[in-house]
Structures are given as structure tokens and as C-alpha cells.
Image: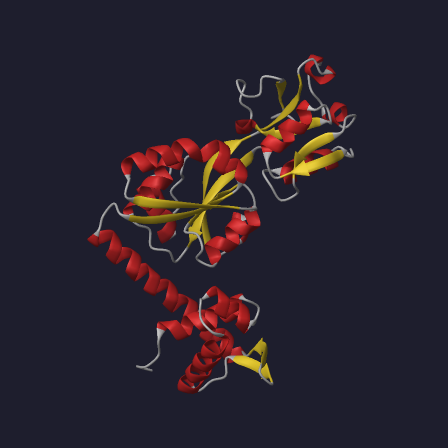
Length: 316
């Protein structure tokens, strides 16, 4: 086994990740398809097991032994990456890069002051922010594209990820100033159901809580337009196309002067935005700092206890 290379393990894992498409794996790793095929064959010969089932030159499946090999390969690669991260952290404290993955709402409304403070403390750390759906955020964490993810949906569905609650928030209803709903004493779901609604796409920003609230009362929500971006929702509300339902942090009284925001915390369940990272990820000093800037209750002690499997309450 002495000749086994980490690069060969990377090829195995990438081929699996790309649905057994060797061409896509080669493109992702900036190498050639024949090169990957050759190295995979060499590794199978060295291990004495067949990892991938084949039909001619095409990969068609993964053998039972192959699934074990792939699982171990991912662990080896993760530990090799952790070794590099730990060494770099000790050798050049305060320098490096931090790969974040999050949704538009978090990137636009929650993260700016956090990133400003982080950059002030760590000017030599390069930040990369990937924006996508909650499902994409989870996938980027799982495949190593990102190190820390922040989203309201999806992150707690993956056992490979450790998740911690950052903060809770509610939805608000937004209408043009002078709208009839702004005159009612107590907003109800029945009243909302009388109007065309504009809100988030089905997988974003607590949309599941909105849908469940209407379902529980046997009401049909007339969602005429959905978007992943609260700014888009507010734009169409301003145009008079419907009543908006957005995350409370997405309403800015100064910027959104043409709109009125109505409290809706009594209508929809509270949402929890979570932070997540792979359970096998070695966190650097500035990773802990970023987490605490985002959610002050998530101190290094709390995060480390979570990693160890402790039950310290982070305070939400």
C-alpha cells in the first residue's frame, strides 16, 4: 500500500460525486479522462478489489467493496485536508482563506456587519462567499466547496453535518402604504388569503412555515409569484402586484419607504437560522472567531463541546 497516492483517492471520490461520469470528474479536477481511468485501475489492482462496475469502458455502478473503499477514501482525504489546515493555522496564524456558503437573505441582510468585523480582525484571511439555495449550501459543505454554511432550511437534514442554532426570526407582511391590510387591528391568515401573495421560493427562507400555517387553517394561499430574493419580492409589492411575506431582517424602514411592514409572528412559526460544518472538519482559530461574530452565544467552548458530542446549551 506504500505507493497509494492521495491523488488516486481524489479521483475515486470525484468520479462517484460526478455520478460515475469520468469526463466530468476529469474536468472538475483539471486533468484528462484517460489519466483518471488509468489511476483508478492502478488503485483497484493495488487494493485487490474492484471499486466500479463496468460495461465496456463505461462505469455503471459501485461494488459492495467499492462503497467501503470510497467511504474510507473520503475519511483519508478529510484528515489530509485537516492536517494541512492545522499546519497552516499554527504556521501562519491569522492568514489563509475561509469558504462560506449561504443564501441570498443571509448574505444580503445578516452577514455584512459580521464580515466587516471579521475582515477588521483578520485582514489577511481571504473570504469567499458562495450563494445558493439551502440545498446547495448543504451540498457545498458536504463536497468541500465550502467550510461553513449558514441557512434556515435543509442543513439539519444531513447527519454528516454538525449544526448549531444562530438566531431566531419571524416573517413580516409587507404592503404598499395605505393598503387595506395596514388598517386592520389584528392581521389574520384569512385576510391574507383574500389577496395575491408574493413570497419566497418553496425551499427558501422559512417558506415551509408559511405553507404549513395556511394548511393548518384549511386555507389556500394564492401565491402568484415566488422568488429567492426579498428585494425582488418588495419590488413587485411596490408595483401593486400583491402582498409580500418576507423575513423580518429584510425590511429596512429607510430603504423601503414606500412600504408598510405588518407583524406576522402570531401567524407563522418562528424560524431558526443555523450554522453548519462537516463533523470531520478541523476548525482553525479564525473559524471559531467568525462563528462567534455571527452568533455571540456560540463561543469556542460551545462549538468545541458540540464537536465532542457535548450537550452545552448555546442559549437559544
